[in-house]
Length: 228
Image (tube, rainbow, N blue to C red; front, side):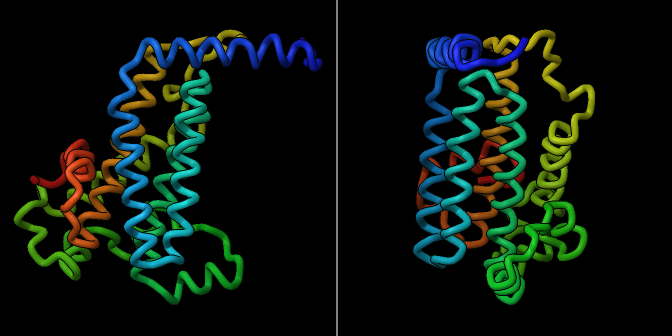
């Protein structure tokens, strides 16, 4: 099939609109919207602490909105790919907050954004227990186990990377080029989204010792790496 303006309208725009209606009607959006707002609060709080890192969080929230829109429109794999970008930029934001020289290089030389989650953990012990103890001395009283935060980050990054790199079992298994609504694929997306936002919320509450927002605390609890 060749695309023309008419086929673009009829085979993409119209089906997407129908999928969006089905998505909203067939799913409880309360958790997604609740934790979208909690993530926006995290970004706003970080911007007040460090305006430079706040710029990164503006990008994160924009990607978050784009991801939810894609999933609501039937583009489930694209939406999950964007979640990995959110996790990468989110973890990088905390790393750069703690490593101002690296952030200055990144900012002033337009350096490649290559602070991948696995590299941060392997090279800098990022959010391993001993790393967290530098700013949250009582981490061992609430962490589920030694390095439970960094272990969850590694696992989640691996899950999302499987989708990005097209590992066969992680593919959506598209049979035709028609865009269709899938309840199962949307629920898979929702689970990945909330668990990713949850681990970023964990990094936030631990790094800034801020447990004041009950919605952020609820978001923290989803991934189950700390006891609150």
